[in-house]
Length: 277
View 1 (cartoon, rainbow, N blue to C red):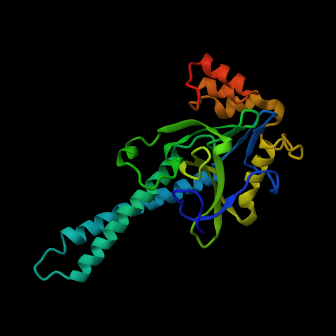
View 2: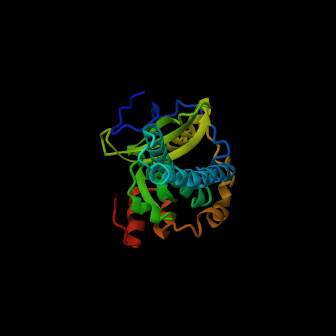
């Protein structure tokens, strides 16, 4: 299905509107919520372990496959009476192995280097969204090869909720699992400048539940329960100690989680000499 957002993101099957009309369920993705902000986990530990092992196995299997194709193309098939079909098949397989490395390595990296579930924070009073995540969460297909030399590189950013648009993306598998991606758009346009993972790999209607909960929260809907998360509302210190501390979150950003007005947020940024966005 074509998306109104440009450039297109592969597998897009639908855009999600904002508001309180969605069914919501925090499930086990909600870590913490209070009256100011909520925090969702994006990499459940079990999923992270499974995908790490799967992509590690794929990476290991690609090594002998690539070496075999190199031998077929450049060593065993160089005689005068070489078989053209074998040459073509060998080159095709070698290209396939290279593409396999290109696809598997980022997935392996961001499962290996993601810590504490890669939480995403939504402040409903300032309308800001905060992420601190593995570099390979950026969903860019064409990556500079140099980035593979920095597997633990982080992006730590503040976004405006007003310019984030939800999109459901199919994972191209027979099991019909969907992810919700936040498209970061230029103000008042459909031109996307970044992508953020919100809720990975759900089946059917489950794909919309976290999006619905976040929208209800951002709209100050009283029907949601702020104590649905792993940490209760009065356990903020414990949440920050176990999830936030030691993960490279800037001090100003941690303080900004609880900002209640744009003026308070501006004061926090001025206090830490952070350039206002």
